Amino acid sequence: MVANCAAYAADGKKIRDITLDEISDFLAAPAGFVWVGLVEPDADLLEKLQGEFGLHELAVEDAHSAHQRPKIEAYGDSLFIVAQTAQTTEGNIAFGETHIFIGKRYLLSVRHGASQSYAPARRNCEQAPEHLALGPSFALYSILDFIVDNYLPIVQEFKEELQELETDVFTDASNRDVTRRLYDMQRELLTLKLAAAPLQDILGQLVRLHPEVIRDEVRPYFRDVQDHINRVSDATNAMREMLGAAMNVNLSLISVRQNEVVKRLAGWAALLAAPTLLASWYGMNFHHMPELDKPWAYPAIIGITAVVCITLFVVLRRAKWL
Image 1 (cartoon, rainbow, N blue to C red):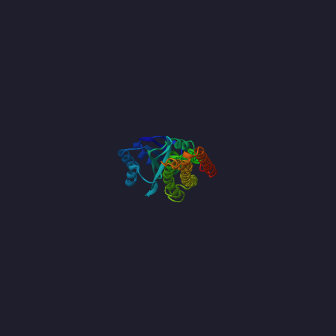
Image 2: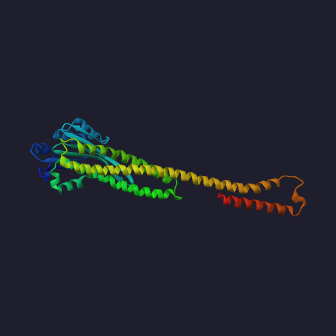
């Protein structure tokens, strides 16, 4: 459940990995900070870290339940941030949550559900100690930037799939499967929108507020992440509108194709109605029938029937009913 627990000096260089019991001892030192990463911890582990960092009990309760909306809350001189993560799993989007506690000298991240490891973000920070010297606020930027960057490939995949579906809409492949996939994409994009939109407000607060935790030198970095999440939100809104239009067009084209089928059936029914009518007249049991007295009458009736059928066929063909 403990992905990492490391101590960093005031110059941003990693001192060493420490145990959970050493956290309070290290925080008693005059400088440096601690970066801890947890993966789906149990109540006992969260309770231990609550004591080590002095976390607020309400924030710890939220971090344990793991069914929170994205938000940012201030508890004294610390912040509690909830962000939703997303990644593609077997062609579908899987969502998770990351809960972040940040104070002047510590950063604690708690991952739940579908979420990639933050080890790459941590390594990038450790390779640039001059940035990590800015403290936990830069580590927070690295995590949020990592979360938002994972949205971008998903948005790109949706764009490519939407282009393929738009092609299928205007071909004979437009059927129930295309309609179902359009609906599924709308649902997943709505979920992605609900995950990304609150991050705009969260990053907006990190850019402007909370000077007790966020250093001014880090605010431009948060502004860059805010720009990325704005792009994700705009792209999501645009694709949702395009999906809505594509679904309407798809349903309209299906109705048009059904109407074409009905027209063709009606045309063939009209074509068959003429010989059926003539045959019904001469199928009645009367003594005085033309073909009974005239040897040429029966072939004449056949010829008239053929002429009527050919005429109807030409007329219906020109009207594109056949």
